[in-house]
Amino acid sequence: MNKPLLIALAALAYAGPQGTRVAVSLQALHMGMAPAVVGLLNALSFALPMLISIPAGRIVDRAGVRRPMQLCGTMMVSALVLAWLAPSVWTLGLASAMAGICYLGFTVALNVGVMRMGTASERVANFSWLTVGISAGFAIGPMSAGFGMDALGGSAMFLLLAAYPVALLVLMAWRGRMLPDQVPQASRSPARLIEVLSDRQFRPILLMSFASPSLTDMFNFVVPLMAKAAGLSGSAVGTILGSYAGASFVARAILPLVVDRVRHWVVVANLFLLSGIGLILFALITTPWVTVPLAMAIGLSHGMGQPLVMAAFVAGSPPGRQGEIMGAQQMAQGGISAVSPVLIGAIGTAVGVAPVLVVAGAGLVAVSRFARRLQRGG
Image (tube, rainbow, N blue to C red):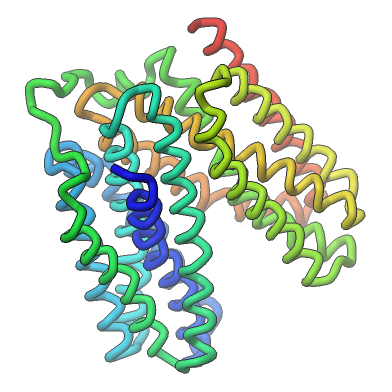
C-alpha cells in the first residue's frame, strides 16, 4: 500500500466519528437540550464501544480488514443521514453511538491492517504514516462540524460530515483490495486472552500503550483548568494545545525518515522520560512563553513515541489474534479515558491541578524504565 492511500484512508475514517461527536453536542445545544442531556449523548460514544471491543477485534481477525471498514462506513453514513433528516434526542443518540462504534472498528481494522502489511522493518514507518492520517482526520472532522454549523445551520452539518464516510467507501471500492484480508485459521494462536495479557514480556508494552494516548487525553483536559487558575486567556489555551498537536503531527511525519537509524526502545524510553519531565515543569511554570515550548516538547515525544509503541504492541500480539488483543486494549483505554477526567477534576478541586501533572509526569518517568528493560532484554 502506498503512503498517500494509507493516510487518506485514515483521515476519511476518523473525520466522520470525530466530527460527529462535536456535531452531536452542537446540534443538541442548538435544539435547547440541557447540558446533562448533552453529556449523556456524548457518553454513548464512549460507553457502548467498551461493551463490544473484544468481539469487534475477533471479527476483524476472522473477516479481515476490508469488510469491517466497509460496514463501519455504511453505518456511519446511515446514522448521519438520519440525524440530518430527523434531528431528535434519539437520532442524535444513535449518531453518537455509531461514532463511538465506528471509531473502534476503524481503529482495530486499520491497526491490524498496517500490522499485516510489508515487512517487520517497515512496520513502524507504516504506523507512523497511519497516525499522520489519524491526526488529519482528528482535525478536519471537528472543523467541518463547526464551520458546517455556522455556514449551513442546524442539522445540515451532518450531511456535510456524511461526505467523509461516503468518500471512504468509494476509496475502499477503488483501492480496498490492497488491504490485507483474513489470516488462515491454522495460523491463529490458541492462547487464551488472559494468558496473552498477563505475559511478562507483553505486559510492559501493554502498559505503555495505555500511557501514550492517556497523555493526550489528560493534557487536553488539564491545560484549560491550569490556564483558568493562572488567568491565561482563551487564545493562550488555544496556542498551547495547538503547539502540542502541531508538534505531535510533525514528529509523526518525521519518524518514517529516521526509524531505520534508531534503537526503538531507547528512543521510546527517552521520549517517555522527556514527556514526564515536561509535565512536571508544566505544573511548576505557567508563563506562556515557557509553556508553549514545553507543550511542543511533550507533543514531539508523544507523536514520535506512539507509533513505536503501537507497532510493538501489535507485533507482540499472538498470530491471528491482533484484532482481539487490540479490542481488549481499546476497552481498557476507553475506561481510562472515561474515568480520568472525573478523578482529575475531583483531585483538582481538592488540591489543585498542578499535583496531578506532577504525579502523571512521575508516572511517565517510571514507565520509561519498562522500555529500557525491553531494550536490555532484546
